[in-house]
Image (cartoon, rainbow over all chains, first blue to last red; front, side, top):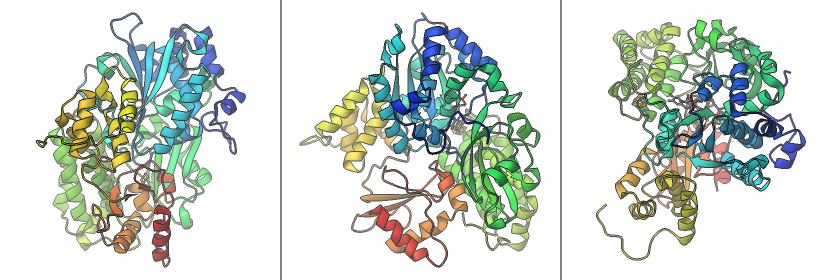
Length: 426
Length: 170
Ligand SMILES: Cc1cc2nc3c(=O)[nH]c(=O)nc-3n(C[C@H](O)[C@H](O)[C@H](O)COP(=O)(O)O)c2cc1C
Ligand code: SF4
Ligand code: FES
């Protein structure tokens, strides 16, 4: 098993500050705040090649370098994205519930690097356990002088506050999250301006995912060169792969980026349940195009997935066996996007609704070959012309299933029913 | 939203205090709105119009600005729901794991469809989107409590499974 640094070793409870410190916790923040300049922290993170784990894979060090120098007219903020709502994704919850102080330590170092006055963590409203665990951890850290005025014996002030979402997926999109954190509907903003110029309360803001900042303590302690020995040249470090669906041992596995998909399914997740045949895999949350079983040897890193026509996304892997109807899977996902569109852009509002109706009709055995063409053309209108990427994701998901499993869609049309009697129901 | 608030305020002193403490964390008071609505719903079970007016006053915004938020976010209820609001995830991992059987079992047992409430006001049923618990499908959340995971309700034991589930739900 490769070495872990995000999830606690099996059988170890790291939730209390004492347990976390006993195994070396908060040494990285101590080093960063006492011995390094903020610029040096940004540089080592840039050098490590760390890329965001929220879905888009943007280089973290570069994102941090967009933030203004201190002394400007407005304070800077770190806004941490703990909305985790991409279907198939359940990894940030593991960090927050099982290693809360690692996450807080990452926020302290990240906040220092970008000269932030405070960090605001936007946690999806359903995650009540994560909210409680983190509230306790923050209380402990404050009492220990690791947050607040003069943290780590410095002359600085930095605190971490928890915010709660309320069930809207779109609030995971970074500008939707900012709107929501300001007490409004979570409707994404047009860019520019980007958050680094005008984010939370019109102040310079960096938005980072929970897992992203949680890599930072290890990078500070062990160096950029060490981090680059894990993973591939363009996708460095471990990551948390969540695997769910038709496998024997679903769960979250901390593994190097670039681990072959087949190894994750067969070795770590114990193979397809009931010894059935593998049929389809969504590699990185439902926004990413589906793969067929023939593509299961792909390495799970940014470049390799792009080469096979998909994306790494959140690393949330959903496995489907040969009983599963691909039209039904597409229906479930289209229903989700129809429910979650914020409605600002016409292509997205109307398009998500159309895709759902068309797919539902095909699933019911009432579709035509013309409907299949319409899915492609509606998908085309939805890509690349909206305020945020939800519209693109909805289009990729639907057209991805159609492209990879066209014969099965056509069978629904010709036979006027679902040809897979044992399939799950949508 | 025309009725004039009459009589005693709906929000308790404890909730008002908790909201006031939240406000101090932000440069703008209205940033406390989402958490304030959770606090209100935790106490009242839903967020009626009068509560919306009261929280608007506490945060210095208009009642309509509160209402926009209440109606945008799926977790908030403007009208009362069952004492035990049962939310079943029907997204992809849970669908693959048999969420439809769970929903159908609850529908049959409670005699209501998703969106409905039992006549005694005890239960209501909702289909929800991914809860971030895909590895332990099917995932069910009651009110805003920690999840009930690995729920299964297919095969010959389905009726028992629903009984078990309702026992856990209480
Ligand atoms: C529709 C949509 C939903 C998103 N949901 C999330 C989410 O739940 N969590 C997350 O970290 N990023 C999410 N993102 C990505 C964020 O916009 C943003 O890229 C990310 O939080 C940046 O952090 P990172 O650079 O550390 O990855 C979403 C993006 C889109 C378009
Ligand atoms: S693309 Fe869709 S979700 Fe994104 S802003 Fe436009 S309407 Fe809203
Ligand atoms: S799909 Fe049900 S919890 Fe993710």
